[in-house]
Image (cartoon, rainbow, N blue to C red; front, top):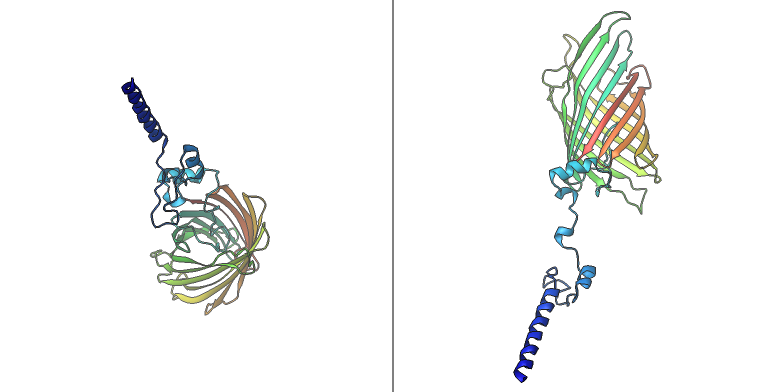
Length: 334
């Protein structure tokens, strides 16, 4: 009888040990050199669920850790992006004063119609695809390229006369944008500031719109968030230019172009933003050094946090600039 009781007691101990082992779940491994080393782990599954940190498979991957398919799907998703909504350099003349987030790739494109009723000739221009590629190299640095693309022109030398077709390929801009100052909620008077340093490479070949030389370009962009809905921004820049299409027998002309711009953005809601802008080009060593002023305005609409449509229209403030121009654009971030 005693042997039977001892045997039953031994089986009960074995079963209890087995149940206890099955009830324990593996927790996250804590390094010995961390402050939590040596702290007792939760003794029950419910405590482990409530107190233990989430394991790696449970963590939501960041934007730079997503697969190609995930990034494609994110462009169509209406969910908020961890990097915030897309911020583009278009459609305003003033680029964005922020850089593309690290590891993100952004494309911007558009089409512009220009009408120049110059005396005695009238000229109409079409620009396409206005393609920009921006990639976040580091937290505060982006690699950027911009190519205006192909320009088609129609010129009428006199009213009722024949139209002459022309145009050509433009040069490509290649460079970097640097985030100098980020938005400071405590000191709102300090502007969010970025700097573009780039060159225009002679990629236009023998096109009459190409400079056939390297042109340096610098642009300082800055902006203030005045209220939750109203933002004021501006830019100050320099471009060394060379024009080759001056007519038969005339040599190429090199000169300097400076610019200044000011733009106001008003957010109607999370998707729709209105803007109105003024900018001026000023020249030195050019055949005509008179400044040219422009004004434009338009709408920026977010299809998703990573896709944007834009529409703009503007005009020149004297008889020298374009009398009227308008365009549309599309941008996407992966």
